[in-house]
Image (cartoon, rainbow, N blue to C red; front, side, top):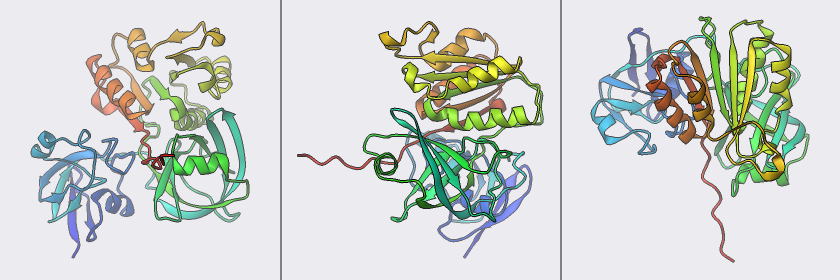
Length: 343
């Protein structure tokens, strides 16, 4: 038995099959609810149940608290209807109703960008192209049934290859395989695109981008898209990393800044090494933004990186006047690492 879901205030409706989440059914029906990780960790898909009951599903307790549940809040990526539902959430505009597809892909090229970041370029079959919005992500479908998500680092106009930036995760099964065993020409299965982290083009507000580590990847795609579309909106990119080598592609935003007067690049290191001879900004990347802006009410902010950084920035920026609906984020979460074996 399927259940009917009505989105308020739009009035859009869709059906949810047994044991299907609200978000999965909405995506399949072509409705664009905000979401990020799809595994109950980032909180981007949080919304309200106006009528009906759900199974809340597996999620991180900090992402959806008991108090929030009592107030009617749910994570749509985890929630499964137990009755017909009326839900309250804002629908996302701007991705033209692009629906995910499952496709095979060949590893065309692998390029080590730093000691722990690998660029992977994927080639789809010659008769296929993936429609996506700059900043979205794809998921690899692994043989054991698990999935691994990575942001697309290229813009849609440059889609001969799909570009990903993979950080080596200690104990991470998939990234260990990529760095130590995978070869070019390997065949992978992927599904995408996913995510609501992409440029809103219905405003001329200036943009602040905040990237932490490989959170630069989707932001790279968004900025390249904006350049290609000849957007004149003022852009300031803050890229935070620990040491100089962790700014693994810093020459590119330096080139943007040198070429386009409306783009500013501000790298920020939290733990620069003596040999870095660093003369730039130091500390936490979100704090650098706070140091530079007393009032954020007139900006759109796009933030991508570790969940703690995204959450901290979100709260701090609201205290500086940032409108809630002008903050867009993609919090990178990691799969459980392979257990370490005692020897």
